[in-house]
Amino acid sequence: MEPLHPVYLFFAFFISATMAIPQQTASITIAAAPAVITQGPELWCSNGQIAVYTTDCTLGTPVSYCFSQEPPIECSQGFFPSVWHPDHCMEESSCFPLSEPWITTECSNGAVPYSTSTIYEGTLAGGESTVIRAVSCSCPVYQWYSMTLLPGSSNYDTFCMPHSSCPRGMTTSVSINEYCASQPVGVCSDIPLQTEICQCADAGQTPVYPDWPGANPTGCELIY
Image 1 (tube, rainbow, N blue to C red):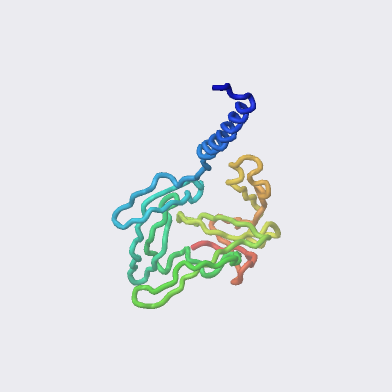
Image 2: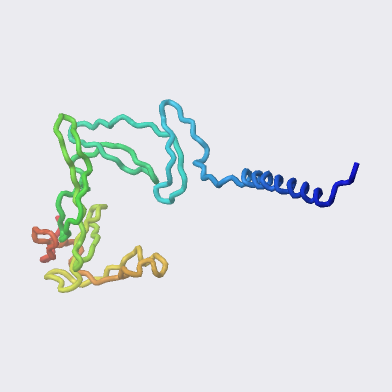
């Protein structure tokens, strides 16, 4: 048998090489699977609960838990259902009196309304349809918040006080922003650390305001 000619050897090597290249390329393609972002371990919930995959309400980290819808809360006469936050990212239903002090329907002490929110809309015990709205209040730009601890009480009252031109019975004082005073430099770059405000000269008195939003105090009166 005659030995193969060098040309045939080269041709045979070329065919085997060209056939090997697609096989090698295919194996590389299969090995390089695309990256997939997984949802994390799948939850198995019982008793009709559903699995919730979400993120933490403030930190944004992945959170997963089993959830079951609670039946609508029922409140007795004089109360309405709403929610409160007992802990971080938690929300629970509860009954609140219709006369809750934080249900602000109008602004006082020199404040002006800037937004209105609906706290509850539905049917109360007794069958009456009710809409409960609360007004958020803020001091005008030419006034400053003054938190005053009422004598004989643990409650603070908020007054909007002018910066200058204090009315009769008031004196100029300095209010320090306690939050900004405890923060690193730059956190409160656009907020003054302290400002001058008017306050009642007698600690047992409270400011008196005309009956309209944004009014300046006209003087002070004794707290009874």
